[in-house]
Image (cartoon, rainbow, N blue to C red):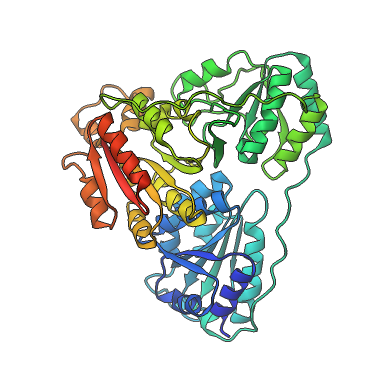
Length: 514
């Protein structure tokens, strides 16, 4: 058995049974090993940003890491934007990055680079295997690192000769670690704040915005009169009828300042104190009042559900009914296409147990409220802000949950970063319906140009924010990548084509002309 096979067998034995790949010459022995070893599903992406973004989506839905296979430093670099997003979402992944053979690196061949230097800023664990006998053990350490709560980025660099030389066989992987127990002192402090009667917000993210956490937080809020909110973006929020609905901190600074005005306390459950996405002239970076204090109930690596259970007990909220959403499901909208009408129709037509991968950016900013009474579903957001996550995120979620419909809400500018994901969806037969909002402009940047006080933009500036001329034919582009679709220009057409996409097994794209 060579080093590559020992690593693949270690991955499979450690529960890593999906590998999103974009290999090159240095990884050919690993590719051959993937072919020989049963139990590993290999999913090809035509760009490394698809590979790493899919691994993020997979982790969010499977609650366990996938592997990626990347080609040397440039391949890793192509995937770093979505590794950044995965890092912010606290998604675990095991990156396998090929390198030149150990004896070849000294010659500074064209693809030679400092792979560890590239990987380290966005990885929690990095190692280069020195020889074939070390590869399996290093792989076990990488899996162990990636599974550390709440999820970590592990990058294992595999020189070509460590893959092809003889190895001693696979290594055992320890069982996953459990989240750290919450602090009883933190629970007592939060309970005192809630009993004080002062204006208090319970701010949630992580496991706390899944159904169990929301139910507990809803009980606490109902019992104490505290307000409840989620961060502006969250890795996976469970929502819909029969669940506790939670709003998010607004992206727009002035809106967020109004929402958080008057607070004296913020109890943090896996979350950070809210700050602006960017700095703006004459506006604060901190979105909360100066005299507002933050209180950490549970850190990201701690058991947020246990912390909420303890706090529920401390404020005697066990028997308090949570404020679940029982509103009627919205009806499909008609007439002209607007953001509000789209949110209404999506809320009306979203199937039960759907997974929403949201990179709608400006168009989708108002979708959250009208979908709160939709059928129960999971909502995945871009937590790192690097665009081009949506199509890969939907791809990884569909691989993790083949029995669930995935809906991608996608801005056109962002989609062009990782449009290759549509090809992967077609090749794998993934059940993803992409709703592509085609306004042919980086709309969010037009607003930001004004927000930062950059003056009156001229034609040259505006052209850098315009992605028309020529207009992208999204239906034709999707078809060329193996995905059928349709273009719509009014809400009646949207309702019909969106329902058609939801009823169609496999991938489908609806281009919404704005």
